[in-house]
Image (cartoon, rainbow, N blue to C red; front, side):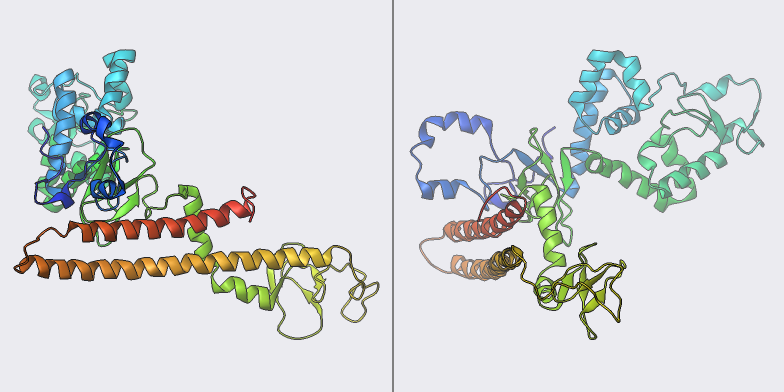
Amino acid sequence: MEDYIYVSSDDDEWDNQQYNNDDDDDDDDDDGEFLDGFTEIEQERNGISEKGPSCKVIRKETLLAAQKEDLQRVMDLLSLKEHHARSLLIHYRWEVDKVFAVLVERGTEKLYAEAGVTLEGKDDYTSTLSTSEVTCQICFEDVPVEKTTVMDCNHIFCNECWTTHFIVKINEGQSKQVTCMAQKCNVICDEGKIRDLVTAKDLALAEKFDRFLLESYIDDNKRVKWCPSVPHCGNAIRIEDDEYCCEVECACGVQFCFNCLSEAHSPCSCLMWKLWMKKCKNDGKTVTWISENAKHCPKCHNAVEKNGGCNLVRCRCGQPFCWLCGGATGLEHTWSSIRGHTCGSYKEGEEEKTTTVRNDLLRYTHYYERYMVHRDSLEAEANMKQKLNFEVLKLEAGELQSKDFSWVENGCNRLLQLRRILSCSISSFILRFWSGAVQG
């Protein structure tokens, strides 16, 4: 079943999100070395090179088909019902190959036990009971057999207790793997029976249960992640190879890092980008203000502002120090008498230390300003792309002989990609400089 692998057509190249086609690569190996720069640009779509990882877009309407395909593979191999296959795949994070590997290495018994799957239950179990009533071991009420439900583990309780149990689990966000409520029983309950009982009580909650089961294909799948677009486009991206740490593009045009779900940030690693975003949020003009109006405590190194009074200040950590030289003062110094103070004495190395700190601040300010210039330019060029696309639509609607203006979009995409790489390169350099990895 391949109908979930995009909605694609010759006229809608935007929706076709598959890169790194191995078959095409084999055919084009001989010709690839003759391609010039302009041809390579034409081969790149929306700024993402075909050399990147193979990935596919899964839309809302094709999500069920994508899930059914993996379910069917497990159902066919192990002759399981759908809810058993789903329990296995959720436990193994929708990695069909891993399910098969565990089956070969450890056998079906271990495979089922680890996932909480039991195949021993009987659909006609209640018909074998010798009495017409059953004592529910939860509420200890005697209820007719027809008002009870038995799961695959053969534990039987009244429908009222089962329904309450299921409603609580769904509301707690545990609907993807609802276990039996018998003590020390970890068997996954039949989703069909859950649906029937909850529907009779709360139809909206039953629909929520079905939605959780459907979205588990994305939420519990290492190879599939939601597009982080705002507002959300409803699409998800599936990686077809083992290269999880990569940059991908959704059909809506959003480029993002598949590993950390933040915006595309090469050449920065995910950790570096996270640190840089935190630094940008906390720094900016604050860094300049602190350097001009505050000094750092010699004990805890927090910034301290002096808004009046003498040059003997006290940090909130309790450490007193001199505002002029920044040196810590001891117990012999009081507010009325400061003995042995050496502010007026020249200290070897202090000037060099001060110069180094000042140069670091100037260097950071220098690169931070250039980073912000590139980010502002990136935003302006994105707006320019929208205007150009509008103009292209008007030209295509006209009576011009040439109708191919794809080079305009390709050029804009390349410009945006390079602008983003420039800004991320600056942040990468700054973080590497402060870690001592580079000199500059």
